Amino acid sequence: MTNETIFRPTVVRTNRGLSIAGTRITLYQIMDYIKANESPEVIRDHFRLTIKQTEDVLDYIKAHYDEVEKEYLRIVAQAEENRRYWEERNKERFAEIAKLPRKPEHEAVWAKLDQWKAKLAQNECYTD
Image: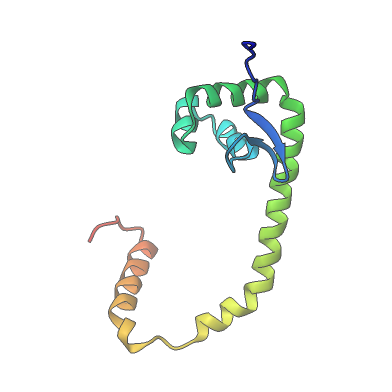
């Protein structure tokens, strides 16, 4: 019997790209937080990672920054392209929905929303 330790990397490449092993979290999601100058603790807490996972991911990004940055920028551009596509595709439908008459059972909610819109237009505070 041998005392072999099986090494399992924290960062793996999946069909989603660089990811944290055993999760659906991509390094591109982590990069959003790095770009926002968030601390490792915030990243760890938000994604519910262990200290080791957080350290391993941040070390990997630091060691392979150019590669990760290149993929991250490609993913961000693709996401923006998808957003623009769906926004354009749904523009007409959203306009149709906006033209629909308000339902009588929602009048109280619409009245309150209209009041808030009027307050915001006058640059008033957010108070009830």
